[in-house]
Length: 335
Image 1 (cartoon, helix red, strand yellow):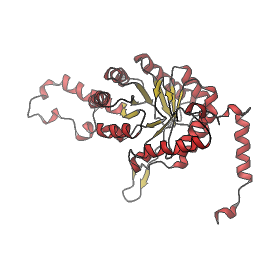
Image 2 (spheres, rainbow, N blue to C red):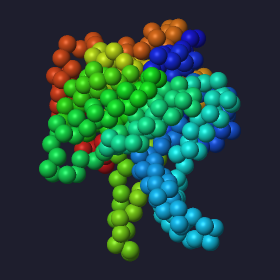
Image 3 (cartoon, rainbow, N blue to C red):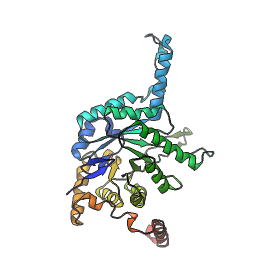
Image 4 (cartoon, rainbow, N blue to C red):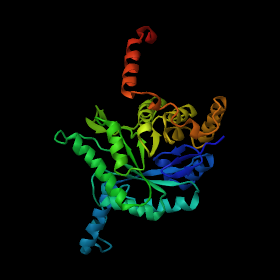
């Protein structure tokens, strides 16, 4: 059975790629993921804010040498300033992974505004990264900012990073655009070698005891795969570059569906945090059984077989399914 696929120009042994998460912070864990079947690894994200804070701290020390004697308490940033500052450590982790594993290492750079933090894309390439995932996580909360301005920001960020590196660059983004299909095509035309669909929208909660906003993180469920599944199926015939599916991928069935829709790879994290690296082997075994039953000999044969390429008017098709679901709703099913 041939599971090989191509993503961002990289020939991979199968479509299973651990996505950006704490799993890549430990080299030993990445090695276990490789041994279990991972075909590449996306590193945890390096955030714009981390780089900017680190640069500000360095600038402060260089411009205030009088504070640099050993007893000067002001030499050290406040705890909230230096927490998780590890831009240089990130580069070192790339180097260490490249020396330890044989699978491609994809760096992840997370930011929004154009600025000096983008220079780290070049440093990631110099450290040995095989590709770069540009993770743009932005909530357009300013009512004075138009949709065109938001979209232009994404395009400009991508162009700035593409101009800084020679390695392939994918863009990881959310689905919340008024015309996502058009936005996807604009990103590809602006130089994106691939798209990662989708970034999860983390929603905070309110603490009724402290009356404070508190961060909230829940790992994904398989149900969440339906959003990327739908868009990948619609976009596959229109995009020339790579497509990575992410969010809600927990099983062989999920990976098979994403492949049939047109994804080149399926990225996962939650299931690996739940069950450990060994689940990758189980997923590949179950995929093999299904492919043999359906008489597929390779992943390439499956890819895009159920995309919108077989539908004349995808918009009308989606509308028809919407109507069918609502009209066929039986309230007794939930009693």
